[in-house]
Length: 444
Ligand SMILES: Cc1cc2nc3c(=O)[nH]c(=O)nc-3n(C[C@H](O)[C@H](O)[C@H](O)COP(=O)(O)OP(=O)(O)OC[C@H]3O[C@@H](n4cnc5c(N)ncnc54)[C@H](O)[C@@H]3O)c2cc1C
Image 1 (tube, rainbow, N blue to C red):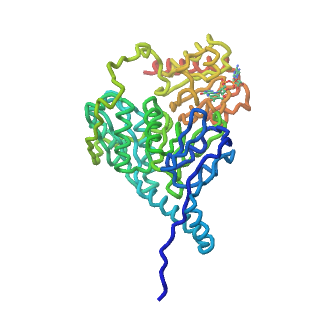
Image 2 (cartoon, rainbow, N blue to C red):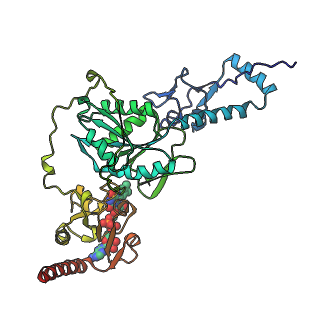
C-alpha cells in the first residue's frame, strides 16, 4: 500500500515596506489591495496590516519604486525550500485555487438592480431611464431586473417601477428614511446588497446618486464608474461601462471583473425612457432594516425649496433646444435664439465657451461639464462640435447644425447641416416658422 502524504500548503507570506524606498506615489498599493490591508500615513506611505494581508502580491507588483517585498517567517521559508525540491506543480495549483475562489464569489451575485431615487415620494425620472437600460442588461445576463426603493410611504414607487420594467422591488419603508441622509441610506443599501447579492447596481448621476453610489462602493470595496454613457454585457458576464475620459477626448470602457456588485451611475437623459406598461405587476420584497436614529449624525430640520428655481429654465426636460456657441459673438445676439426657441416652444442652451464668456448662465450649458439633453430637436448655432459638447446632446432625436465652417465636427453628428452665416440663417428660419403658423391659423 502506498502512503498518502498530507498536502502541505504553500506559505504565501505577508507584504512589508522596505525602509526609505517609498516615493508616496499616490496610494497605488492601497488601491490594488483586495482585502483593505493597506492603510496610508499622512506622508503617503503605506502601513501593511499583516493580520489582514493574504499574500496576494498585488501591492508588491504595482509599486513603481519596488518599495514593497514579501516577508516569510523562518518556518515558512523552510516549507518553501522543501516544496521547491519536491512539488513543481504547487504554483499552478495555487493559481487554480485562486481562480476557483474568484469564480465562486462571482457566481454568488445575480440580478440587475436600479436604485429608485425619490424626494418626498416624488421619483427622479433618471430612475426609470435606468430601468430601461437595466432591462437590456438583465436580458443579456438572463437575470431579474429589480428596483431598490428606500423612503417613507413610498410603496407607490414599487408599482411604478413594475410599470417601467422591474419584476421585483426591494422595499425599505419607514419614517427613518423620510429624507435622504447618507448614513441611513448607505446602511440600508449595503444591507440589501449583502443579503441578496446583485451583480449590477445602477444609480442616477444626480446629487443624491453620486453621494450614495460612492459611499456604497467604498463600503462594499467594489468598483464604481461614474457618468456612464453606455452600458453593455460582455461574454463573461462583465458590465462594460463606457464613459468619456481624459477630458472627454476618448471614450473609455471600464470593467470591474474581480469585484461585485459592479456599480455605475448614469446622468439624467443619457438613456432613453422605457415604455410605461400601465398596471404591470411584480413582487415586493419588504425588509424592516433600521439604523438607530442616534447613529445618524445628520438631521434634516427643514427642506427649503430654492426660491431662485422659480422661473429658472430646466433645459434637461425641453423638447426643443436652440443652443448658441462662441459663434454668437456677444450676449445680445442670444435674443435671436430666444425668438426662435419661443416659436418652437423650446428653450435656449449654450456651449461652454458661451457660458465661460458670461453670455449665458451655467445652468444652460450643454455637455460633459454641463447638462445632458435629449430633445426632439437640437439646433446648434455657431457651435463647432467639440467632443465635450457632443456627449451632452448627441442622443437628441434630430440635430440641426448651423455653422459657416463646412469642416466643423458638429456636422458629423447632425441630421441636417446648414453651412452659412447664422446671422442670416436663424432669422430666416424664425420668419419661415412664423409664416407657416400664420398660414396654418388662416387655413382654419
Ligand atoms: C474637461 C472639459 C470639459 C468641457 N465641458 C464642456 C461642456 O460641458 N460643454 C461644452 O460645450 N464644452 C465643453 N468643453 C469645451 C470644449 O472643448 C470646447 O472648447 C467648446 O465646446 C467650444 O465651444 P464652441 O463650439 O461654442 O466654440 P468654438 O469651438 O470656438 O466654435 C465656434 C464655432 O462657431 C462658428 N461660427 C463663428 N461665427 C459664425 C457665424 N457667423 N455663423 C455660423 N457659424 C459661425 C465657427 O465656425 C466655429 O465652428 C470642455 C472642455 C474640457 C477640457
